[in-house]
Image (cartoon, rainbow, N blue to C red; front, side, top):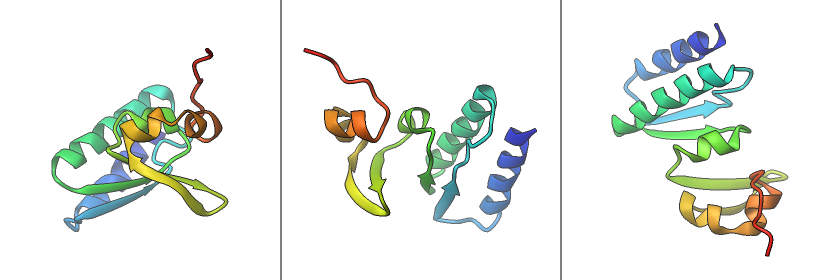
Length: 104
C-alpha cells in the first residue's frame, strides 16, 4: 500500500542515522488511516531526537504533530513560529492553513 511504501522510504532514510529528516508530502495520496500511521511514525522519530522538516499540504493533521511552523506563500516565508502562536493568528489560519475563523 501507499502507507507501507512511505514508511519503507522513511526507514531507508533512517539507516544513515540522520540528525535531520526532510519529508516532502509524506501523506500525499494516502488514505486517512495510512496518513495517521505515517504521522504517528514521524512522532516516534521526533522522540528519537531527530529533527523532522515536513513540506505538507495536509496542514491540519501535520499541525497536530508540529512544534514549529513555517508558512510559505509564492516561495517566500511569510510567517514562522511555534505552532500554538501560528494557530492563534486568525489571518494566517483562514488564508493559509484552511482553518475556520470564529465569527463575532
